[in-house]
Amino acid sequence: MTSPSRFPLLAAGVFGLTGVALGAMGAHALAATLAERGMSHAWETGSRYHLFHALALFGAAIWLRGSAGRTRTHFRWATRCWVAGIILFSGSLYGLALGGPRWLGPVTPLGGVALMAGWVFVIAAAFRTEDA
Image (tube, rainbow, N blue to C red):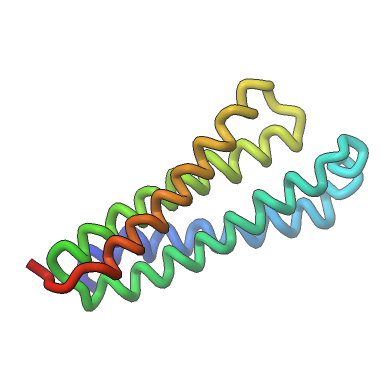
């Protein structure tokens, strides 16, 4: 395995595993608590974005195996943004859903911005005409 793909592949595995586990917890073990708090939707949103971006990380890991130059740099930055975004966006929604501190509320949009920034890096990679 090439080293540029190691981090996104590891992140994809960790976030895929935790996304499925947290999604299942929200649907089963925490369902009554989340419904009582009116936070089922928040948990589901966090879980959905968590898993979608775990898949994006997996795709980036595959892409990084065959890329070079600036394309590789763009994808590396995309993976960093997605990791930060999953932690900030989904993590804050999970925390809020479980009654965490109110300061988590403003963290959620920061995570959303990080997720979007990752996609901006993918768009930038698409416009690379050379790998210099």
